[in-house]
Image 1 (spheres, rainbow, N blue to C red):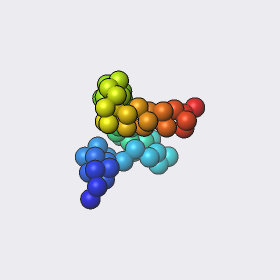
Image 2 (image 1 turned 90 degrees about the vertical axis):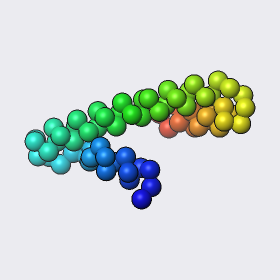
Image 3 (image 1 turned 120 degrees about the vertical axis):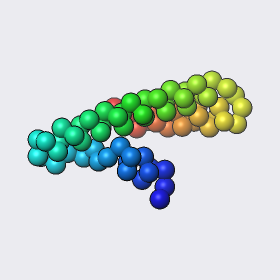
Image 4 (image 1 turned 180 degrees about the vertical axis):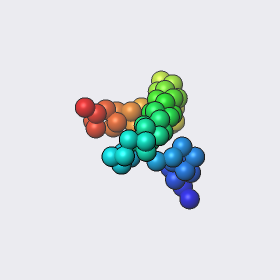
Amino acid sequence: MDMHEIVMKLIGRIDPTGEPRTNDERYKNLEVVVELVDRLLFDIQQVSVNRDKAGQRAYAFLKELQKHGP
């Protein structure tokens, strides 16, 4: 089991089903995932200000992420 599978197992599914009660629960799970991703991205951004190996990797990741944005 990889990290993604572990986290999603802890949080629960986020994909909507069309059933209101299930969708409400999954929306709550989505909010948890969004908060987690926000915090992780903040951590990565903090590392990216350094110009060591980790900082360069973090910076490259954030730049790549920008390419796939809206």
